Image (cartoon, helix red, strand yellow):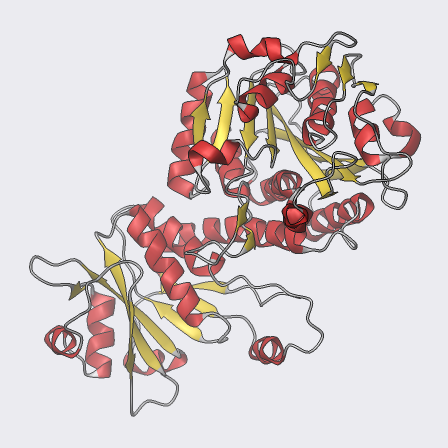
Length: 505
C-alpha cells in the first residue's frame, strides 16, 4: 500500500573495502567564497580518494553547479562492484533550513531505489542534523491502492532504502526514527479512503499502533453508542451516517507512578469524510480531499503513541473525536439546537462547520472529567486559517503567550511551523444566538475572521485551562510534492507535539 519506509544506520570511519557496501554516496557542497565547493571532512576525503575524484575536477566538470540546497549532481563511478554513483548535493549555507532542503533533495533522488546509501553530511548543530535526517526519509513517502503497480512491486522486492550517517549523529538518528515513524503512520491514516476509514476502523488502527509498541504505559478506550449520550456535538455530526457511527477514541500514556506528573490532554478533529452535510460543499471538487479531515486526530494519536519510546515524565491523553459528516435522513439541520457535553446549547447554522462541534465535546469532557494541566486541540478547522498564513504555517490561538512562544520556537526547529494568531474579544458577539447559548459559526455578525471566531467558540468549552488551539487546515494538505512534503496529507503535527511533550518532563 505504500513504499517501504527507509531505515537509518550509523557508521564510523570506513576502510576502502567497506565503501563497496553502498550503492550511492552523498556528498554535500556548500557556498564557497567564489564558487561552490565540496565540503571538507575526513569521511568525505576518504570517499573522494577512493573514487579518484578531486574537488578541483568537480568544479571543472560542473561549472553551473551553484550549491543550492535543492541541487543534486550525479557522478557515475566506474570500476567498483556495487557503487553506482556519487551524488553531490547542494548544502547552501549549511544552516538548518538548507540542511532540511538538502535532505529532501537527496531523499527524492533515491526514492524507490532500495539502495544502500552513505550520507556524509556534517552539521554545525545537532538540530540541523535532525532536520536533515528526517527530511531524507519524509521525502520518500509514497502511497496508493493500485492493483497492478509494477513499479511498486519492484520497489517492494528491493526493500527499503538503507541510509547510513556518521556515528556522531547516533542520538539524532534515534530521534529522527521516532519522528519519521509518527509522520509516516499519520500519512497512512490520512491517505486511506473514507469507504475504508470509518470511525470504527480508526479505533482498530489505534489499538494496532498501541499493540505494536508493547508498552504497558499505553491504553486505548473506545466510546460508542449509548456511551456517547452526553456528547451532543459528536452525535449530531456522526449520526448522519447510517454505516459509520461516531466514536470517541481515548488513547492514554500513563506509566506506573505518573499520577503526579503534568497531564496533557490532546483533542483531535477526526472527521473521516466531510460532505458538508445538508449545507453541501460547493463546488463538489472541494469535497474530494475531505478524507483528510481527520488529520488532527491522526496527529495526536501518533504523537501519543510515540511517548512510549521517548518516555517523558508527562501523562498524555489523546481524545480522537471521530465521525463522518454525511447527508441522510438523520443528518442535523440548520436551525437545530444541540446540547454539547457539559450542558451548553448551540444553535446550528451551517452543517459544514461540524469540526468545532465535535471538538467542543472533547474540550468540555477534558475540562470537566480529566483535569488537564495543558489542553490542546488540533484540527483542519477553517479555510480562513490559510488565507493569511498560506500552506506553510498552522494558525495557533492561545491566551498563554509564553506557551505560544515555546510552540512557535519548537515548530521552527522541527519543521511543523505554527504562528500565533489573536483571540479578538470584540468578535465574541458574533457567537450570540436568540434561541441557544451560542451559535456555532459566528453568523450573528460578519467580522470576516473565520479562524478567529471558530477559536473563540472553542474557548467557551475549555474552562480556566491552559489551552492552545491549532488550526492546521493549511499545512495539513498539499497540492504537490515539494521538499519533504508529499501531495495529499502531509502528516503535519506529530513532530511538533512530540518535541513539546518531551520538553515538559
